[in-house]
Image 1 (cartoon, rainbow, N blue to C red):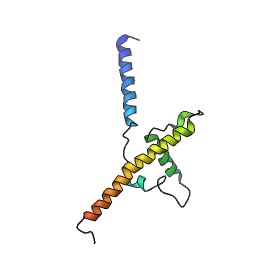
Image 2 (image 1 turned 120 degrees about the horizontal axis):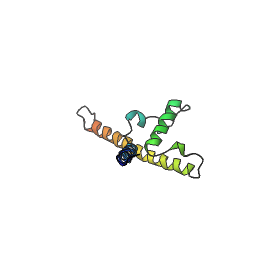
Image 3 (image 1 turned 180 degrees about the horizontal axis):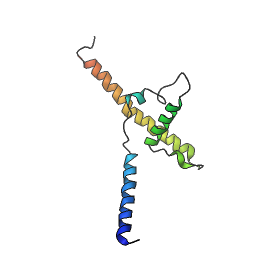
Image 4 (image 1 turned 30 degrees about the horizontal axis):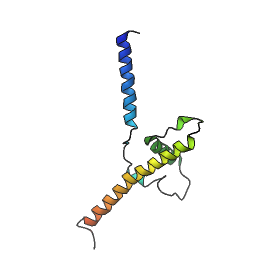
Length: 113
């Protein structure tokens, strides 16, 4: 491989690695209203659906969980850390949205006393 080709390949690899790090970085996309009012944040009266479980996995991955870790000694700890991060994300995204909508309802001209 020639030197310029190696440099180009290295730059491309660095760019891809950096892009993926930012995609799952410390500021993942905020939770939607639907996600805030669905499993795993609310208690269900029935078993979770496959779609709900896949959504939970996606949300856990968005805060840094990697299920492909295999059989290692850090499994429960990694999952618990991701669950804690997801709960913090829920508090930041969902509780803030809920309090903002409550405040807006209280100050709207149609609010009843």
